Length: 250
Image (tube, rainbow, N blue to C red; front, side, top):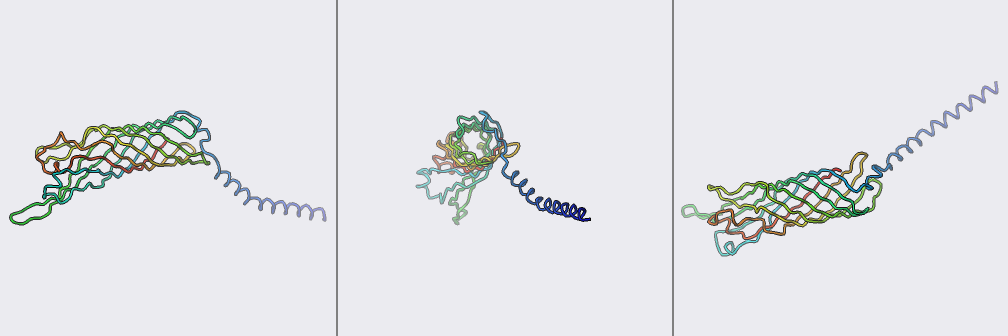
Protein backbone atom coordinates (compact mmCIF):
# COMPACT_ATOMS: atom_id res chain seq x y z
CA UNK A 1 0.00 0.00 0.00
CA UNK A 2 2.78 2.41 0.94
CA UNK A 3 4.64 1.46 -2.25
CA UNK A 4 1.58 2.27 -4.39
CA UNK A 5 1.17 5.66 -2.69
CA UNK A 6 4.87 6.40 -3.32
CA UNK A 7 4.54 5.62 -7.05
CA UNK A 8 1.44 7.81 -7.33
CA UNK A 9 3.28 10.69 -5.61
CA UNK A 10 6.23 10.49 -7.99
CA UNK A 11 3.92 10.35 -11.03
CA UNK A 12 1.99 13.41 -9.81
CA UNK A 13 5.22 15.39 -9.28
CA UNK A 14 6.44 14.45 -12.74
CA UNK A 15 3.23 15.70 -14.34
CA UNK A 16 3.40 18.94 -12.38
CA UNK A 17 7.04 19.36 -13.41
CA UNK A 18 6.21 18.84 -17.10
CA UNK A 19 3.33 21.29 -16.98
CA UNK A 20 5.62 23.85 -15.35
CA UNK A 21 8.19 23.42 -18.09
CA UNK A 22 5.76 23.88 -20.94
CA UNK A 23 5.56 27.72 -20.71
CA UNK A 24 9.36 27.94 -20.53
CA UNK A 25 9.72 25.72 -23.56
CA UNK A 26 7.26 27.86 -25.50
CA UNK A 27 9.14 31.01 -24.51
CA UNK A 28 12.40 29.44 -25.62
CA UNK A 29 10.96 28.47 -28.98
CA UNK A 30 9.56 31.96 -29.53
CA UNK A 31 12.88 33.61 -28.66
CA UNK A 32 14.78 31.22 -30.88
CA UNK A 33 12.53 32.04 -33.80
CA UNK A 34 12.73 35.75 -32.99
CA UNK A 35 16.51 35.83 -33.19
CA UNK A 36 16.95 33.61 -36.22
CA UNK A 37 19.18 35.10 -38.92
CA UNK A 38 17.57 35.11 -42.36
CA UNK A 39 19.69 34.53 -45.46
CA UNK A 40 22.93 34.20 -43.43
CA UNK A 41 25.13 33.79 -46.54
CA UNK A 42 23.37 36.38 -48.69
CA UNK A 43 26.11 39.01 -48.55
CA UNK A 44 28.87 36.58 -49.50
CA UNK A 45 27.77 36.65 -53.14
CA UNK A 46 29.31 39.26 -55.41
CA UNK A 47 26.33 39.82 -57.70
CA UNK A 48 22.64 40.28 -56.95
CA UNK A 49 19.67 41.12 -59.15
CA UNK A 50 16.28 42.56 -58.38
CA UNK A 51 13.57 45.03 -59.31
CA UNK A 52 11.99 48.12 -57.81
CA UNK A 53 8.91 50.31 -57.74
CA UNK A 54 9.00 53.96 -56.82
CA UNK A 55 6.90 57.08 -56.39
CA UNK A 56 8.17 60.64 -56.53
CA UNK A 57 7.31 64.24 -55.87
CA UNK A 58 8.92 66.55 -58.42
CA UNK A 59 9.11 70.19 -59.41
CA UNK A 60 11.08 72.48 -61.71
CA UNK A 61 13.52 75.06 -60.47
CA UNK A 62 13.01 77.98 -62.85
CA UNK A 63 15.24 80.86 -63.91
CA UNK A 64 13.06 83.70 -65.10
CA UNK A 65 13.94 85.93 -68.03
CA UNK A 66 14.23 89.70 -68.38
CA UNK A 67 10.93 89.59 -70.23
CA UNK A 68 9.26 88.39 -67.03
CA UNK A 69 10.81 91.26 -65.07
CA UNK A 70 10.09 93.99 -67.61
CA UNK A 71 6.74 92.89 -68.99
CA UNK A 72 3.88 93.97 -66.73
CA UNK A 73 1.67 91.22 -68.14
CA UNK A 74 3.21 88.67 -65.77
CA UNK A 75 1.99 88.52 -62.18
CA UNK A 76 3.76 85.27 -61.27
CA UNK A 77 5.34 82.18 -62.80
CA UNK A 78 5.36 79.32 -60.31
CA UNK A 79 6.55 75.70 -60.61
CA UNK A 80 4.00 73.35 -59.08
CA UNK A 81 4.64 70.12 -57.23
CA UNK A 82 3.44 67.02 -59.04
CA UNK A 83 3.58 63.26 -58.58
CA UNK A 84 5.14 60.57 -60.74
CA UNK A 85 6.33 57.01 -60.54
CA UNK A 86 9.14 54.80 -61.78
CA UNK A 87 9.91 51.12 -62.19
CA UNK A 88 12.89 49.10 -63.30
CA UNK A 89 15.58 46.56 -62.49
CA UNK A 90 18.78 46.62 -60.48
CA UNK A 91 22.18 44.98 -60.55
CA UNK A 92 24.17 45.15 -57.31
CA UNK A 93 27.91 44.35 -57.39
CA UNK A 94 29.73 43.88 -54.09
CA UNK A 95 33.14 45.56 -53.81
CA UNK A 96 33.56 44.94 -50.07
CA UNK A 97 31.36 43.91 -47.18
CA UNK A 98 30.15 47.47 -46.69
CA UNK A 99 30.60 48.91 -50.17
CA UNK A 100 28.87 48.04 -53.43
CA UNK A 101 27.98 49.51 -56.81
CA UNK A 102 24.36 49.72 -57.89
CA UNK A 103 23.27 49.93 -61.53
CA UNK A 104 19.56 50.67 -61.95
CA UNK A 105 18.03 50.93 -65.44
CA UNK A 106 14.53 52.32 -65.13
CA UNK A 107 11.61 54.12 -66.73
CA UNK A 108 10.31 57.28 -65.05
CA UNK A 109 6.97 58.96 -65.66
CA UNK A 110 6.73 62.64 -64.74
CA UNK A 111 4.42 65.62 -64.98
CA UNK A 112 6.25 68.96 -65.13
CA UNK A 113 3.82 71.70 -64.12
CA UNK A 114 4.23 75.48 -64.32
CA UNK A 115 1.43 77.85 -63.26
CA UNK A 116 1.26 81.31 -64.85
CA UNK A 117 -0.75 84.22 -63.50
CA UNK A 118 -0.98 86.95 -66.15
CA UNK A 119 -2.80 90.19 -66.57
CA UNK A 120 -5.68 89.91 -69.02
CA UNK A 121 -8.26 92.37 -70.32
CA UNK A 122 -11.86 91.95 -71.32
CA UNK A 123 -13.42 95.06 -72.75
CA UNK A 124 -12.32 97.72 -70.27
CA UNK A 125 -11.88 95.33 -67.33
CA UNK A 126 -8.47 94.01 -66.25
CA UNK A 127 -8.18 90.75 -64.33
CA UNK A 128 -5.63 88.06 -63.47
CA UNK A 129 -5.90 84.88 -65.47
CA UNK A 130 -4.30 81.58 -64.50
CA UNK A 131 -2.78 79.28 -67.10
CA UNK A 132 -1.39 75.90 -66.05
CA UNK A 133 1.17 74.33 -68.37
CA UNK A 134 1.55 70.57 -67.80
CA UNK A 135 4.22 68.64 -69.70
CA UNK A 136 3.86 64.85 -69.48
CA UNK A 137 7.18 63.12 -70.07
CA UNK A 138 8.64 59.62 -69.99
CA UNK A 139 12.37 59.21 -69.40
CA UNK A 140 14.62 56.19 -69.82
CA UNK A 141 17.05 56.50 -66.90
CA UNK A 142 20.27 54.80 -65.86
CA UNK A 143 21.04 55.28 -62.18
CA UNK A 144 24.72 54.65 -61.32
CA UNK A 145 25.18 54.67 -57.56
CA UNK A 146 27.68 53.81 -54.82
CA UNK A 147 26.18 52.20 -51.72
CA UNK A 148 27.89 52.24 -48.31
CA UNK A 149 26.15 50.23 -45.60
CA UNK A 150 26.60 49.61 -41.90
CA UNK A 151 27.56 46.29 -40.37
CA UNK A 152 24.73 43.79 -40.36
CA UNK A 153 22.68 43.63 -37.17
CA UNK A 154 20.73 40.36 -37.23
CA UNK A 155 18.31 40.95 -40.12
CA UNK A 156 18.83 44.57 -41.06
CA UNK A 157 21.38 47.12 -42.23
CA UNK A 158 21.29 50.86 -42.76
CA UNK A 159 22.99 52.46 -45.76
CA UNK A 160 23.68 55.71 -47.56
CA UNK A 161 23.77 56.00 -51.33
CA UNK A 162 24.92 58.53 -53.90
CA UNK A 163 25.66 58.84 -57.60
CA UNK A 164 24.38 60.20 -60.90
CA UNK A 165 21.40 59.62 -63.17
CA UNK A 166 21.61 60.37 -66.90
CA UNK A 167 18.25 60.23 -68.66
CA UNK A 168 16.90 60.43 -72.18
CA UNK A 169 13.33 61.37 -73.04
CA UNK A 170 11.38 58.52 -74.58
CA UNK A 171 8.12 60.36 -75.07
CA UNK A 172 6.19 63.44 -74.13
CA UNK A 173 3.58 65.81 -75.41
CA UNK A 174 5.14 68.47 -77.61
CA UNK A 175 3.62 71.70 -78.82
CA UNK A 176 0.76 71.70 -81.24
CA UNK A 177 -0.26 74.54 -83.51
CA UNK A 178 -3.43 75.33 -81.59
CA UNK A 179 -1.99 75.38 -78.08
CA UNK A 180 1.81 75.74 -77.93
CA UNK A 181 3.35 74.55 -74.67
CA UNK A 182 6.66 74.23 -72.95
CA UNK A 183 8.71 71.26 -74.12
CA UNK A 184 11.23 69.26 -72.13
CA UNK A 185 14.71 68.73 -73.56
CA UNK A 186 15.60 65.29 -74.78
CA UNK A 187 18.37 64.80 -72.20
CA UNK A 188 18.65 65.32 -68.47
CA UNK A 189 21.43 64.67 -65.96
CA UNK A 190 21.02 64.59 -62.18
CA UNK A 191 23.06 64.02 -59.06
CA UNK A 192 21.41 61.75 -56.49
CA UNK A 193 21.85 60.90 -52.81
CA UNK A 194 19.78 59.26 -50.11
CA UNK A 195 19.42 56.81 -47.26
CA UNK A 196 17.81 53.39 -46.91
CA UNK A 197 17.52 50.13 -44.98
CA UNK A 198 18.15 46.52 -45.95
CA UNK A 199 15.73 44.05 -44.35
CA UNK A 200 16.53 40.35 -44.71
CA UNK A 201 13.55 38.02 -44.96
CA UNK A 202 13.65 34.21 -45.30
CA UNK A 203 13.44 34.28 -49.12
CA UNK A 204 14.37 37.80 -50.26
CA UNK A 205 15.82 41.16 -49.20
CA UNK A 206 13.59 44.25 -49.05
CA UNK A 207 15.10 47.74 -49.16
CA UNK A 208 12.99 50.90 -48.77
CA UNK A 209 14.94 53.99 -49.77
CA UNK A 210 14.48 57.76 -49.60
CA UNK A 211 16.39 59.61 -52.31
CA UNK A 212 16.88 63.21 -53.45
CA UNK A 213 17.69 64.19 -57.03
CA UNK A 214 18.91 67.55 -58.39
CA UNK A 215 19.17 68.25 -62.11
CA UNK A 216 22.39 69.84 -63.34
CA UNK A 217 21.41 70.89 -66.86
CA UNK A 218 18.63 72.94 -68.40
CA UNK A 219 15.67 70.67 -69.06
CA UNK A 220 13.36 73.18 -70.77
CA UNK A 221 13.72 73.27 -74.54
CA UNK A 222 14.14 76.59 -76.30
CA UNK A 223 14.13 75.06 -79.80
CA UNK A 224 10.82 73.25 -80.13
CA UNK A 225 8.21 75.81 -79.24
CA UNK A 226 6.82 78.99 -80.68
CA UNK A 227 8.76 82.02 -79.42
CA UNK A 228 5.75 84.23 -80.05
CA UNK A 229 3.91 82.32 -77.34
CA UNK A 230 4.21 84.77 -74.47
CA UNK A 231 4.38 82.17 -71.69
CA UNK A 232 7.58 80.69 -73.12
CA UNK A 233 9.32 84.05 -73.02
CA UNK A 234 9.14 84.21 -69.22
CA UNK A 235 11.58 81.32 -68.65
CA UNK A 236 15.20 80.94 -69.74
CA UNK A 237 16.24 77.90 -67.71
CA UNK A 238 14.72 75.08 -65.70
CA UNK A 239 16.24 72.19 -63.75
CA UNK A 240 14.53 69.20 -62.20
CA UNK A 241 14.27 68.48 -58.48
CA UNK A 242 12.79 65.22 -57.25
CA UNK A 243 12.17 63.46 -53.93
CA UNK A 244 11.58 59.72 -54.40
CA UNK A 245 10.67 56.72 -52.28
CA UNK A 246 11.88 53.43 -53.78
CA UNK A 247 11.02 49.87 -52.80
CA UNK A 248 13.72 47.41 -53.87
CA UNK A 249 13.30 43.63 -53.90
CA UNK A 250 16.39 41.43 -54.31
